Image 1: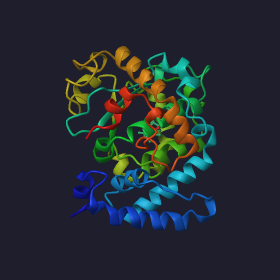
Image 2: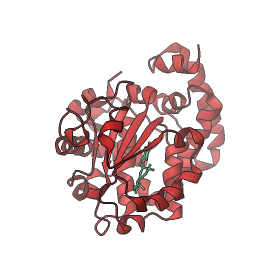
Image 3: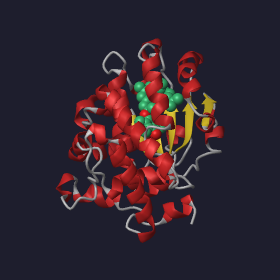
Image 4: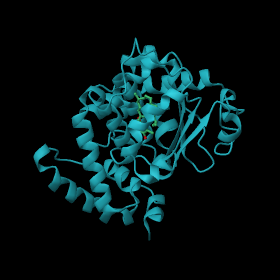
Length: 295
Ligand SMILES: Cc1c(C)c2c(c(C)c1O)CC[C@@](C)(CCC[C@H](C)CCC[C@H](C)CCCC(C)C)O2
């Protein structure tokens, strides 16, 4: 059985066991110094699915993930949706309710809603990290990855000044090899000319595979965006017939707020399998059935 076929099996399948044990053994050896003593199956399977069950590559991804978190405490230390509620309330971000034709999650970021005088790039980054942690618990997302649409309408110098080379490095790391999610597409719409220098800071660190998945649509994006996404799932603001952007942002904000405890647990114990622990008081009943038992 090859990697993608293994990915299709459920978490508790016997055939996954040798891979999980092997990654656990390697991870425990490697993290002796960092003091991590337990890795849940669910945690390890995220990394295996992200690397099509290549144990060596999964281990590398796992160690990069831990290092990234350690080196970015300003971002990963506080995974609290309520701490950035003011920003979420401006309809800055949504995960669309429907997956695309290939099963990928579709995320929308509306950069223009971010007022850089009120919110730092670290806080903005935190939102992406929280969403990433939540969707990476979904089996189907582990298999089919995600696509992100960045609406850069309103991008200004105030935004650009927040992105320094160190932050650009952190952005390219999570996109390439520091987070257990398959990035299947990045779509920029309404990007102004002066977004180029910022993109030029991020681009050199990206592997070719990711570079090829970045699409710049400009202001006339309606036609070209629909080459990638069916109108059924896109909000009307992005040329589709799905629910409006304000509504989907509101819904996802509620989802994040419901996951507050869960996210705190992840920030405190990143290697534990929090979503599937018997202690389901961590997350509301509703959110569990909607978000975590799919696929
Ligand atoms: C796991 C994961 C994370 C954590 C993630 C993203 C994706 C696709 C992920 O899979 C995309 C967004 C990002 C990188 C956070 C970005 C935060 C900054 C402050 C936004 C500023 C605006 C960017 C200059 C816009 C363009 C970025 C693209 C070239 C990615 O966080």
